[in-house]
Image: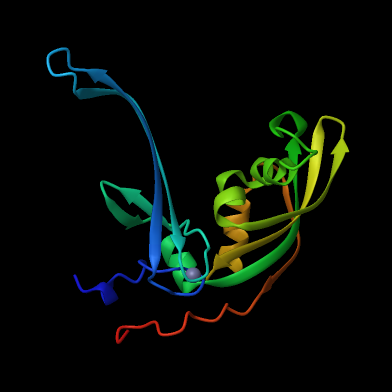
Length: 186
Ligand SMILES: [Zn+2]
């Protein structure tokens, strides 16, 4: 398949196709008693992050399986065809679901409590502050995400939120400029 047909195989922010994948592999294998070779897998864990070499952003619309980068369904079309939307919002979560709310990891922990993996992997999430309310924590956030319409942006936020969500404002931003020299002739 010519590369120009793979609309998803590029950076969702700057459209560069200059990508690299960082693969972390952890495996436990049996040892073959005759040869000493690594034999069947007892347990394995592979984590891969695709990154753009042009703008250095992670590419959450791309996964890595069997030695090949693949699009993540339900996500890549929205991110490639979409524009950035910025939401000011709150998510109310159970205090016990927040790993830590102070120190250097607080931002990530509160983002994860509010939006799960979307909060830490896909969205650009900035925790402005948080308030304790009994057993609950109200997390005040600024979130940037990619979507094709206001309705889709709202829906993605609602589905990602792990507690009651209140959106104060949601506005479309202009797209970051495309990487120079990209396109089929490059
Ligand atoms: Zn890029």
